[in-house]
Image (cartoon, rainbow, N blue to C red):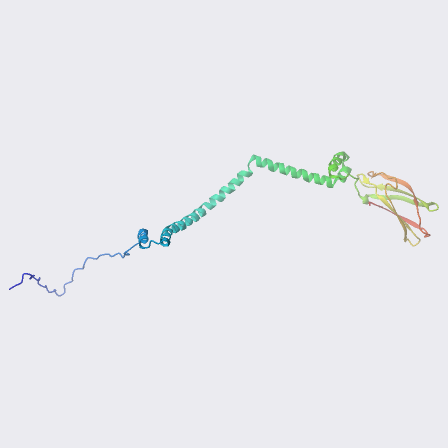
Length: 251
């Protein structure tokens, strides 16, 4: 007797030789992780210790800070040329201001005046000799600087034109000389060195005569001539004087 749980089994159809089974429809499978990211809340639930909480909170801000630094560097690189251009433009605009230009002109004038004053002090003697009208101005300039305006010194333009040296009586000799200037400007009166020599032309005695010793003026006029006669006391210690030499110089 058949049981109540009996089920009919469908008949098996034998495969036809040479028949090609129909392909099954293809299904695209995408491999995905079971869990993309563990939420921070789950992490806190899993481990609620203070160290774990701090670590969980600090993960995302660190990444955000790194991203912010990278963005800041990129923006700085992009804004670099623009900033330098703006700085250069501001500098040019600063030097083009009327006030700045006026200050620069004033400073330049001060430097030029200072240079001219330095040249005037350095060449004061020549300037006074070339242009006597500038002498009072140069005297005023030298007053605070404690300098003096003296005649120009050009010993190459001073010539002893003539001289004589004769014995008067005892140890007294009479020196006469004449000086001439070849310069176009007044020159300072030079001093004179008198050298007495023996028969072998060896020096026996030297004597220096300053302009004050010869009662000479302070200046020798341009293309001028000056002459004088001076009494000189000579003590040679028994050496015989056979000759003399004269030399004009500036002490």
